Length: 171
Image 1 (cartoon, rainbow, N blue to C red):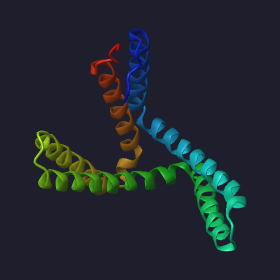
Image 2 (cartoon, rainbow, N blue to C red; image 1 turned 90 degrees about the vertical axis):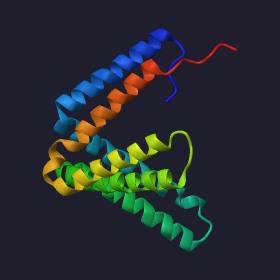
Image 3 (cartoon, rainbow, N blue to C red; image 1 turned 45 degrees about the vertical axis):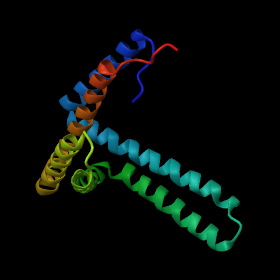
Image 4 (cartoon, rainbow, N blue to C red; image 1 turned 120 degrees about the vertical axis):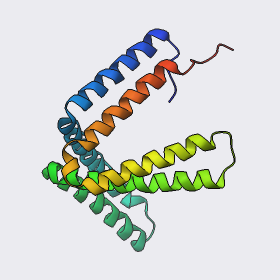
């Protein structure tokens, strides 16, 4: 993440990220539900975008595949907006599998690599795999808090990173 060059903007951005992180962690269900609704909105926008691209397809088969893609995105987005709590439960399971898979890939990268950060890659793989496994094992009961808490922790880490990463050098 690139940090703003102005120290004032850097501190302001970090402060906003920390405030968002605190809210997400304090109200994990609310933040998870809002995130789920945002994903639904993005899916609908992607469906509309795919639909608009229909005219650019030269053949019927291309138009059919583009139309199916548009309907899948828009239909999924509408479902998410109509049923955000059920979608949040599904999203939690998806994130669990995603983290578990990412962790295994990090472990494979650590096993195959010999770089100076191999230990950190190994640690990242272990932590990510365990987190994914915990989400999967505790699903669906963890759906009420997990996504919002993970969002808050991610925002908090971004804020700390913003303050600790050196700014651009004058050249």
